Length: 429
Image (cartoon, rainbow, N blue to C red):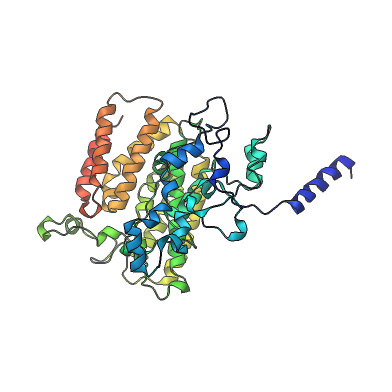
């Protein structure tokens, strides 16, 4: 073997043997004004250098731990039989960066809330080197940084809390105690953070929206499969958090004024709460745009699972098998969508296709309507970033009217939402 080649291999093996296990160092390690703690955005560097300042002042994640001491959290803890929410593992899993002691550096403090490393991963092995000349993003990834430029991985990272994982879950018991029901849309939630990084692709939000819809369906399906396992045997089945909350929790009215009874109960018996398909309602148009045949396969499998989960007496084994099979399809489509090109024309087609689908979306319940409103706003903002619309004021008014329809979830009215979707569709370019 050539000496130079041998030296490269030997040094690589030596590095692998001597590298310290990665540890979480805490957001203070990023707070220097010369790093990420500046006040003004820098335009002559690869990063803005105000990322820490943006997070600590404007980002709700920074206040996630503090929320565990507010009156609602105190009441929830009492109902759930937890002494203190800010000391309970089931709460700290999402309201803080809760990692084992062995993975904490001396500077780490879990009371910092959902901080830098919650998204970017443990920083100890790349924190110093990533500031050196010639260091690349790829080398940081190799040293343990999470690749959030990958839309699939970004969505996965967010959804560990915004939907749940094997270790973290918001179930019906927690919702009944006062925890908000979980919903998510990657592009909209990213815009609300606010963004603390630079983007060169003007249609990155469209890619994130489209990929995020597929990933969240995949993760929801995996949650259904998990909820069938033996550890859930003592709990009600199906897990009510997997169903459409507002099929039961809605404002009551006289029978002659009931739009729900007027529309009927397609695919289920009256009185059976349906499976929550909000994470599919918008995705179906995205998949049809990218892979129409894949869209037909996904629709068939989603309909099978809907029938099982909405039967009122769902078989755990059958539900688990169907959820896993459908999850595999959604996972493949997520990768396909993430790699697909997104431009002005495709953005416009998605915008129009979702707006035209108001009748279907509205019938799937308030959460589906909410997904549509967020998706349409994100798509429209992406489209006008390149080409302003002549009737911009009219379109934005139509979008605001959509959000008004979902402001009070228990008072949601499907026919009115569908009507507003039709009105918006008429003014879209």
